[in-house]
Image 1 (tube, rainbow, N blue to C red):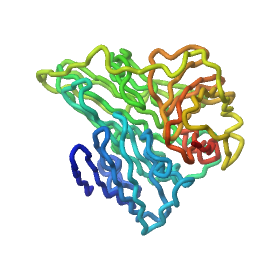
Image 2: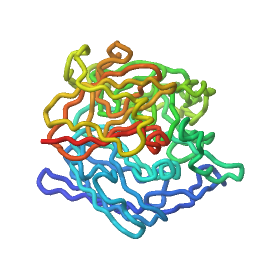
Image 3: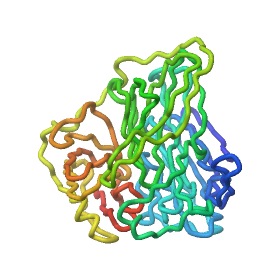
Image 4: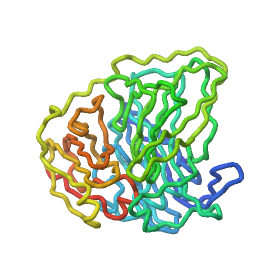
Length: 416
């Protein structure tokens, strides 16, 4: 990756060249497929910045098809959102320049937003981490992009466009962490790490467990929570991110990083391994995780009346190019997401964070900023968000990529 950082007084510009091209992707020792990568790698390069930095990315496409980049979770200007509603798709041999300020700390990711079902499956995604001063201190940090691959009997990427996949979504049997099949990870005994976890899979829901041990969820899509949430598992649906405080463990232990059984409406999958975590000899720990992480003020009370109802079943059957009513800058939005279908749908709002007010009539266990939320089948989820001063064309959609591709989405305008 060609990266340069320039500083003018307190303003930093991070400049990156991303070349999207075909790549021989060795996802396991001796096992290779023809994938798509940024700068010849899967996943693409980790992009790192500080709050307030300007990121400049020149995308060059050397793919055999058009492409764009969506900056998932970043509050970009509308024209930088990377959808074909706001920019022309980048033709083979052409370039497009993205330029935006990163206003929020958190774990984000970037991925193709053109022919996503194929382009993400083949590897066009990467992580983007934005940091700020302060915050909890850890002994180490790692970014884990979870994904899967669907292969045919010959070991090549299975064909796309299967009718069953349109409705059920596409899940593979090869489970990946950072582009590698079930890798071995290592953590020093007695230490606590920050794990930034991204679910980059087309469809797979990951009910994440680390050897059944307790860990703390410290952040979600929009950055840190108000306080750590101790748990032994967390559901991460396609498009979602979680930041975890993991450890300490005893030297010599071996833990399975795995997905526990979960039924998203297509039958319960078996417990499935993603990685093995080996605990190395102990090291001194300097980790400091405060009981209060940040302030998050509720936008509205949990029982606020909805200003709009979005029927995911109707959305699913509406076809492409559905247009929703515009929203006005500064007008608080309270949306009821109603899922009368027989399967869960992760709802993703482009460009804005929301708060979840109610899940099945009850407030969630912790207040958080989100851009993707699972709406379980036969249920209702209420969210609140504020359109800030970034007018333009936006969209929301199911982040099961096959559902998005078949039209489970809508465009809308934010107007001044």
